[in-house]
Length: 606
Image (cartoon, rainbow, N blue to C red; front, side, top):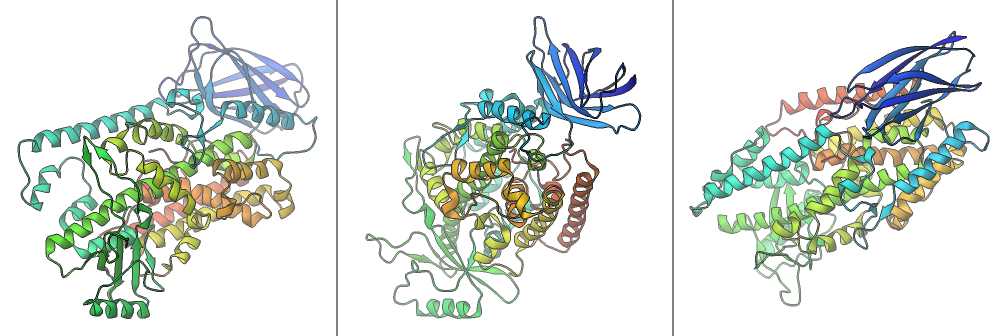
C-alpha cells in the first residue's frame, strides 16, 4: 500500500483548459494503476490529488492520460504532471507542453534525459522509437521553391500540427500588430494624399506613430556620412562589411581620379579601408508594381576608418561594370549634396533587400525552420538535445508558414510593395543559399573571414562574440552531462540522423558549404549546437528585434538538478552581460541595444 500525490498543471494561455474529463494512469517498473479521478482541467491551474495504490509500483516510468469527450472535443493544453510516491521515492516529473485532443492515450515518460540504447526490451527505447515513427508522419518536409531549403509541409498555418501553432495570446498580439501597422500606413497615406512633397523636410509629415529613442536620433542624422558608415557596423544589417586586403576588381576608376586612387591605396596600406559589396543583386529581375517598372541597384561602397574610429564613405559605385557601361559612374562626398544623398539612398535600398531576404529570412528564419523540423523528426522527447533546443524552435514553423502565405507568396506583400518582389526575391534567395556557409553562421569565424575582429566601434561584433561565448558555455555544460566522450557522440544514432537530416535533406546537400554530415567529437557537437541556439536567438535578435527574454522560458524540459544548474548559470551570465551592455550604452551617443539579452527572443517568432 502506498500513497501517491499527483500535481497536474494546465497551461495559462487562453482556451488551455478543458471541460472534458481526463483519465490518468501511473506506470512504474513493477506495475501500473489507473487513478480514479474526475479531472476537468482549468486554465492556469495546478490541481493536486492523492491516491492510494495497493501495491508498490516501483520507480515511476510513465504517466498515461486520456481525455474523454461526448459531443465536443475540447482540447486541453497540459504543461506537466509531477508525482511524489511513497517512502524514499523522489518526486518524478512528466513534462508535456502540448495539446491533448481526441480520445487516444498519451504516454508521458519520466523527464530524465536519456540517450538511445540498444535494448529492444527497454520500455524507454520502445517509447522513443514509437514516438519518432509517429512524428515522422506528422512533421513532413515540403519544397516551397526549388533550390531553397525545405520547409514544413503546410499550405497555411491551419495545416500545421497543433503543437507548433501560436498560442492564442501570441496569435492575437501578432495579428493586432499587423493591423495596427497597416492602419498607420493608411492614415499616413490619407494625411499626405492631397499634398506633394517639395523638400526632404516633408518626410516629417509621416514621421509619427510608434517611435523609439534610436529612431529619433536616426531621424535627426540620417543624412550624415558618419551615421551612414556606422550602420554597416552596428545597424540592422552588420553582416556585409569587410576589411579590404586589395582594391575590388569591380571598382573601375576613370582617368582624372588619380587622387581618389591614391587615397584608397593609402587607406589600404594602413588597414583602414573597408568595402560593402551588393553584387548579389546584380541581374536580379526587378518588380512591376501597379504597372510601374521598379529598379534595383547592386552598389559597391568603399569606406575608411578615420583615427577617431568613425567609418566614413569614400566612394559609391551604383552598378558594376558591364558591356553597356564599362566605366560606371562613381559618386563622391564632394558631389552636389542631393546627388551624394541619392547615391547613399540607393545603397540603403539595396541593403534593405539583402537584409530582409538573405540575412533575415534565409539565414535565420529558414535555417531555424530546418533545425525545428529535423528536431521533431529525429530526436525523441527524452533526448537531451531535444530538451536543449525545444525552447528555441517554438512558434518558428507558424511564423514561417505565415511568411510564405502572406509576405513572400504570389501576390503577397513583397509582390505588392518591394522592388525584388514578383519573383526576383526567389532568385535572390537561391543565390544567397549558394553563399550560406557553416562558417558564416559562427560569429568568430565570420568576423575573422571579414577581417573585422578588433575593429574599433564594432558593437555588434563585440556583443555577438560575448553572447556566443555565453551560449557555448551553456551548451557545453549540457552536452558534457550526457556525452562523456567522443565515442558516445559518434555512437548516438538519433543524433547522427538529426545531423544528416539538417545538412543533406533540409539544407539540400549543404556539406559542400562546410556543414557537417556527422558528429565525431564533443567539441564538434557543441559548436554545431551553439550555432543552432545562437542563430535562433541572438542572430535573429540582431537582425530583427523580438519580444521574449533569452534563457527565461517557462517550460521545464530537464528534470535533473545538474542540468537545471547549467541553465541557471546561463541565465546568470546573460544578466551580467545585460548590466555590462547597459553601462556601456550609457557612455554612447548612439546606444547599441539589439543584442541586449532582454531584447532577444528565445526563438524565431516574428
